[in-house]
Amino acid sequence: MIKLAPSILGADFGHLEEEIKKTDESGCDWIHLDIMDGHLVPNISFGPAIIKYVRSKSDLFLDSHLMISNPEKYLEVYAEAGSDLIVIHYEIEHDKIPLLKKIRKLGKKAGISINPHTPFEAVEDIIEYCDLILIMTVHPGFAGQKFMRQVVPKIRQAREFIDSNNLDIEIEVDGGVSLKTAQKVIDAGADILVAGSAFYKSGDYSEFTQKMKELAGKS
Ligand code: DX5
Ligand code: ZN
Image 1 (cartoon, helix red, strand yellow):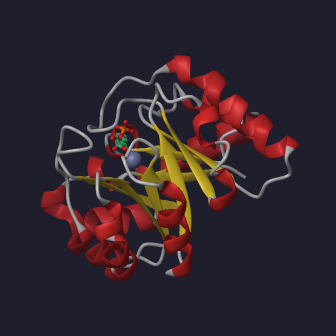
Image 2 (cartoon, helix red, strand yellow):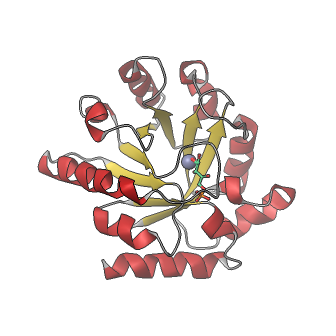
Image 3 (tube, helix red, strand yellow):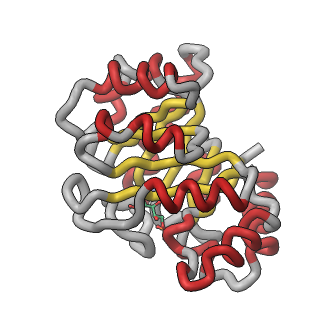
């Protein structure tokens, strides 16, 4: 069954408590938290205090997507704030394996994210240290960008690699996922869909979630 992870970055932060409540009650599966440092990506979002706040308002699985250059400094902080999964970027300049091991040591699931222009082969050797691969279908930094359909073959490639090697690794897809683009992502083999703008601009979060699940049923 496909999981839906709304990205809280698309929510109305002026009414965050209500937004979290409505997200929680929508029937979605996870909450996706986009942490940006203005260095690895050209935007700054929020930090651990928001994760802590979301944690205090929802029991949903919290998926922290760290778009930061120096995750090694902050892994404990993001773990303690209440993340269930911590995803780091392949594109950072540090060794990824020790970081992934550390995330697991902290008792959290570990994920690696790859940008649209990073080939899947780049992570083949480190994927065994991951519980999840996050495939970006926009250049990370902002919500509301156009889905890059040229990334779809990479999702399929990841699915084939994981299945043929019998690996227990989930595939999450993030960026521009909407009711219009989701079918391609689902058919290519994604397990988790992140939706920011499409979810929060839908007006009815439960209906959006239900429609997404119906699309998944069609594949
Ligand atoms: C982009 C973020 C995404 C984004 C999703 O850097 O990682 O999670 O918030 O938003 P939409 O669905 O609007 O592309
Ligand atoms: Zn994200």
